[in-house]
Image (cartoon, rainbow, N blue to C red; front, side, top):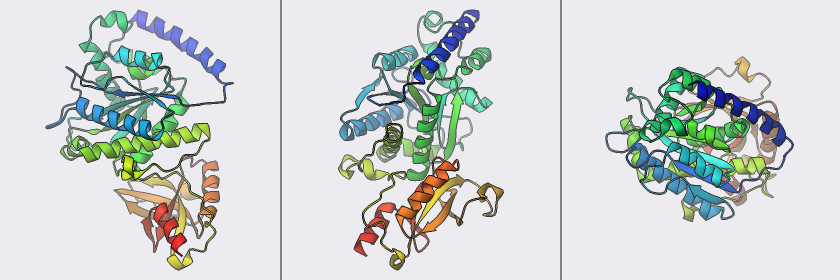
Length: 381
């Protein structure tokens, strides 16, 4: 334990130096992505009544990687495993580092004694905010105990020790801001496009994220202990939806940090099973009056499981606040514009006000429709 604390202290100080040395590097490019399918081989991970975490994680990982390979051939994709084999936790991080990963994505499933628990959540390396987060980290770190030479390889870290996990969680990943940004985009896609319960972006101490020297997230795609969610995650369609959501989040994240733009992926590659939501499409006809079609563009800036009054202080300073209910959440919009160009300007204003993930949505006769359908109607008009 003392050895672990000493090594942790040295690494923490060194990481601070690295942060300062990297702060002047403003150009960021994503060239290599390492995808980690959790568990495998004699480690099944969480086990449901029909499916195992290791199989679901691998299926989603391979689909996600395939989407990148098909649609972004300039991106190198590496996997910690592509078959049902056991890969030690330290080797997973080693693969990421040897591949010089710019992004590390670890895919998992959750389980709980409460069979009603459900929803997706995404973790980044950081301080445990709750006992629940700590328990998730301890569960994923416990795979260490299935390996040999644990004390030598893991520097005295004990996944069952509360003290080890608390000290371990104090290590702040030097890529924390980027990790949080990517994690939020993943959760947005799960919530908005796949209709999954959003359990939020969280911080916890995961060994594999701690050792991977890259922007990294760990995704808990859902609970195999929940019968309905297990059926969804175990199905071909559910796995395609989740992989597609992660791909779209990756595409948006890459666009954000590189300042690039991407065209919509072809539905022939299976990507259009879930629509994107933050790609603001401005076309030459964006100034056409859409009133004849009763189409309006608004900017969605928040979602909540409880219905908040529109005169709430949380919405002060926002104009024309409206709410609509979809997939179990109350979704709040601001503005009511005839052209998408006007909505885009308001989107920028909202993002400057602190609503960083604000995005444009379209309505016809007060019913939510996709922006693609709205623009198609405008063209026809």
